[in-house]
Amino acid sequence: MEIMSPLDASFLHIEDAVTHMHIGSVGLFEGPAPGPGRVQSAVAARLPLVPRYRQKVRFVPLALGRPAWVEDPHFNLEYHVRRTALPAPGGDDELRNLVGRVMSQQLDRAKPLWEMWVAEGLDDGSWALISKTHHCMVDGVSGTDLMSVLLSKERESTTAAEDGWEPAPEPNSAALVAQSLARRAASPCEGLRTVLSAARGPRRVARQAGEAARGFVNMRTLFTPGASSSLNGPIGPHRRWDWARARLVDVKQIRALHGGTINDVVLAVITGGFRDLLLGRGETVDGRVVRTLVPVSVRADDERGSYNNKVSAMFAELPVGLEDPVERVHSLHEQMQDLKQSGQAVAAERLTALGGFAPAMLLALGGRVATRLPQSAVNTVTTNVPGPQYPLYLAERRMLEAFPFVPLGGNVRVSVAIFSYDGGINFGVTGDRDSSPDIGVLCRGIERCVAELLGGPSLKPDKRPEAVRARP
Image (cartoon, rainbow, N blue to C red; front, side, top):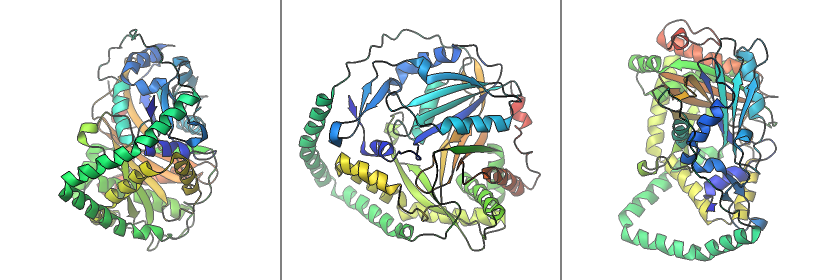
């Protein structure tokens, strides 16, 4: 039995009927689709490396403690690895609709919190792997490591080997309560250890306190609501999903032409996409910004590969009021430099760390209330996850492209995720199905802005680059 961290538990507590806290991805693989059972066998061979995939969540009675991970005595791989097919003609619209439906369904909390869907029947002979994993299991940056574990650098299939796994006896409610009370009784000792550690390193503690204080001051503007926008408002349980494509070599060329960093260029093209979206909705953009939450990993180097959440956040303002795409790059570069100096990420991490001192019942209540507060101070979420720059394989099939999925929460109706893989930078856009039927405008705007900054024609909408199609 392993107790969840406060942040991991919060991802469970904020989930409700309309806020589903699973992240995910859509991988496009070369065809033909593997035969029945092939993907299950490939996943089975990797399960010993990711024990969390065979664990489920147990909640402590009366919320006397944080939830715990326990091994699922009824674990069945066939439940988690599923197979489906796109309806004819099997084009991009059918794939988008399928992903939207799959991601609209909340994961069953009585089972390990993940699913994979093998989707065949794509019109070009390829197939897709749709995966969804609850955010409490792993944050996005560590999730890249997890994907690299499940997929292989080699084409040859790995034969599933018996690992002799037998689930440990599942603890009963009394054991969960007893462990939680024991941990609470031990918490003063934890506090004493923290004080002693501070005494041994007063300069380090003072420096961290100064960084956090500076960050809190720079976050004060977040408590001022932004301008009203169609990007904020009530959401339902159903989702739309769409994507945009770019190439890493093109983004690097844009950086060389106009300055800034790769991240500045990525945020600039997203800004152009939001500008198109708002203009398409008849909203004014003059002098306007779209405020976005940007998750930041605060995991130390020696913690890579650990499957827990170590994330903080910065808050950037996308200058949708600027018409010139080059000006957007320069504006965002200056802003991101200021944010890095402001200490915002440090301050946000300190706020999440405070959850460790809150009783689990208050943590649950606070998380739910937070999702119901007006959130016009933040219009969207933009998360960027670097992926491997080499090909990965599953069941002897090469993954050609990968697109991310990020959930919606609170009053945020559109979120954007960016994932780089094997020379590509791909964008996954999630929208509330009822209020955001036009997220395709945002996606096409991203592709158009990449072309503008390069000074050439944009890619044809919804068409995979020939360089990707022609890969061996």
